[in-house]
Image 1: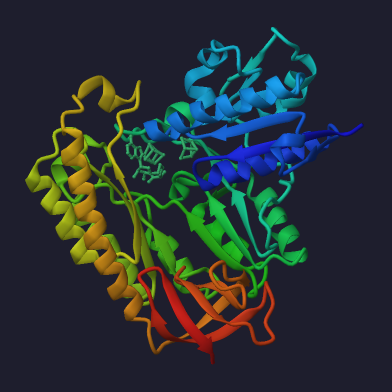
Image 2: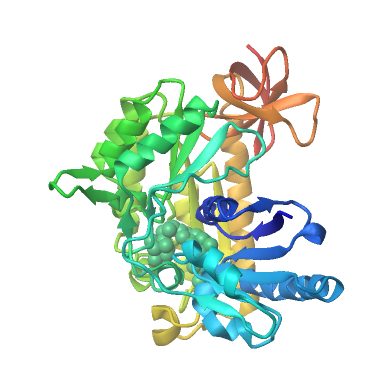
Length: 440
Ligand code: SAH
Ligand code: SF4
Ligand code: F3S
């Protein structure tokens, strides 16, 4: 009988796409996907290490998986992804985990599954300089069939001092652009209308063919956008030090490249940016924002920020708040600093901002951002937008939802529209996270 595999996915969009790669690799070995843990022969968690609470959550899940093993002997439990890479055989100590596989080891999963037996766990956490899974067609796990993730590179060559990703995902490598364009064409022909090109720092995408031909991110973006005007192209994540005028001009020249840039700032204080090794200044960041807005006045901007990084003073924090006020992001992912073992910051700087101060500063940033979001969303009221229909709205299944080019979520009456259609809507009202629209 066919074996069933169940995967829980944590962390970033790259992990979601990796889960799709794992399903594809294991489907070839006869494993069928299930969404019910209770009927799975193999239970995997694709994990994240970026903050300590992400890892704590997985330790909790391992206990839940252990109950499944108890109830149904023979069930295999595997931890894969970033936490597998970071903790390696330490994950085997509890005896509750049978398989540990890092982000570059997914091709080994069939072998590990064949070899595993009670008391004989299997591990592969080798990182690679070449692996991009370029030839593997991911099994899409999204429900709508409208929007697909495509990883264009893996790893990261930056050493932001707080960040564990370079250790869990290894060195940066870019994927062959032909395989990226092929994948985008393939999903488009299957009815998808949006692709999101993924990498930790897409601006440093750079592929050199054996003949010496170089393709950079701007060229890749153009190639994907030129597949069809009805295919929307998004990308994440951009790095403020690397996002080039050529990329911005490529966006501006092609309406199907969505008007949205996720540009993590991390801090508004130059002293902290230096300490974080971000390699740009507040002034540089603001200049990039000004350039984006001069080329694309309607471009959506979102960001990531860390409150309470090592040695952060009230002054540094005030600079972050003033930057948020000055830029006016549409939305932001906001975090309290979490020290990660092995990173530059953990080795060199004491984690000296008390927890209650971190939380207070984080809450101040969140409160300010909520205000700014509401302003940014209100500014859309009265405008007419083109929306790619994703499906029924979660809150109100009688209505549809979809994103505008600037990435704002819109909710509107269904009319004759279906998932994958482009709808023209007029914004009539909003919250700080949704535009309420009528059909135009
Ligand atoms: N490659 C992307 C983001 C990777 S991680 C970039 O360069 O921006 C996603 C976000 O998690 C980061 O932007 C940062 O804001 C946050 N983050 C990373 N390490 C963290 C840590 N140790 N503590 C708190 N937040 C962290
Ligand atoms: Fe981490 Fe910096 Fe790389 Fe982003 S660019 S993944 S924050 S090291
Ligand atoms: Fe987490 Fe790994 Fe992504 S640490 S944020 S899952 S790259």
